[in-house]
Image (cartoon, rainbow over all chains, first blue to last red):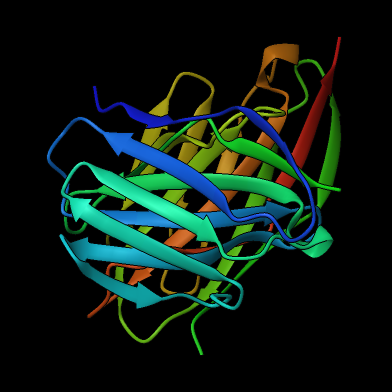
Length: 111
Length: 110
């Protein structure tokens, strides 16, 4: 089965730090996604990528950027972390249409 | 605007007490509807994909159905291990994005 691996389960960062969240998938999927999940708000799409070096903004891209230099890796970057970016971050991948596979999530706390 | 609404927000059931979770959606052409299960602190785990009205899928105590405006996740004789948050998502025609509802938190009591 597809494996989507996020580099960290838990992270604690200071306000103003640049933060990198890494995601790797092992099934040659074209599409990769970054969501954040907050209580009562569900999963909200930050960015997605449909090919290497291609990206599209999701619903809440402000304060974030992404990088996809290789097909299997999709990185989320918090340019200058703020406390309102404390959240659970979920990476997913998919092959065109069809189900998305999720990583285990990264719980980020910004202090 | 494409939208997914799930109800109820939370549901408590006694073991063996069957019930249904609702997912209402508004999309400009449905490419697929997906159900996921999410345990606390973990990523969502795929359950079902439904593509067209009238379609049904089953897995153990779970059965998902689809109409043109909503989907139901029926849970028959639930057990405590079915306790989780159940998420519904849609993928609209012309896009690869998934739009999620806010989920239903299910608690099954022994």
